[in-house]
Amino acid sequence: MTRAAVFLLAALLTAPTLDRGGAGELWSGLYVGGAIGQRDGDASWETTCLQPGFSGGSCPHSGPIYATRFEAGNPVEIEIERLRKAGYAGLQWQFGRLIVGVEGDYGKAPSRVSLAGIPGAEDPDDVMRGPDEIVLAQDWDASARGRIGFLADPTTLFYATAGRSWLQAEASVTCAVEFPDGWCGAANVGRTDLISQVLEGRTWGGGIEALIQQHWMLRLEYRRARYGQLDHVFFDGIERNTDALGTQIETDTRTVSFGLAYKF
Image (cartoon, rainbow, N blue to C red; front, side, top):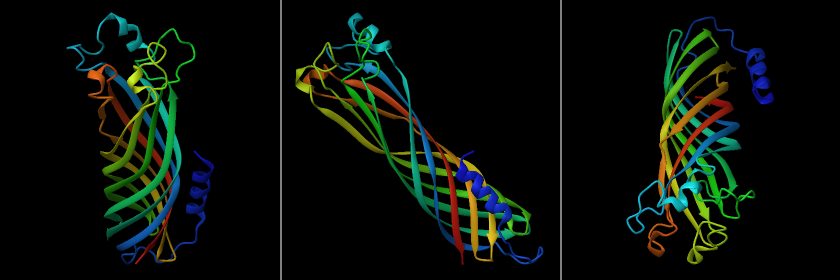
């Protein structure tokens, strides 16, 4: 557990709360808030095909010359970590000790990770991978979720949440030197091919929330998200696809956040 999470948990447990017994619907209503935390991403990059569509070549590679390359460092796991700032809003209803509601959020955590070499396309005998390069980048994420929780006492809520999530992601390949030292032929040396796409997936998690002074809600939340895979062919249609790369990228994220909201 991070220091921020420990600090927030202590704040939740020691914060002044209302002395209202069990009466009333303290939690019902609209709320808006802001959050800060960390988003950790686990991305898997796999080169699935070399030279797709070139001279009738078959995948995963076109002939024995590429067989050893295709197995080199392929697939590869990449970790992406970044501070995340977000805003959120929701509407909830109280039924005794049961709380149900809907919530949406939007967060920014710009991040960029580069890796020397192209998995599955590099010379396996080259100890120093590269100077070809792949880059994975992530920017904003958003979600629309349902929430359900149980009041441990009139002002302390334990809840679960789940729904849909979206993540803006980019992936690129840069060819720096000519084959056989790199992957690409002369036509693509010095070129970067990039794809940018909004990935859709599902998210789930939970947290603890404290109602403070009737209108303020302090929370600690943990969520995971799993997004659909991104399939793309880099350098597609150039030089009869001699440098084309079929790829498959999968992304999961884990987010821990501290939030403070005002309930109307």
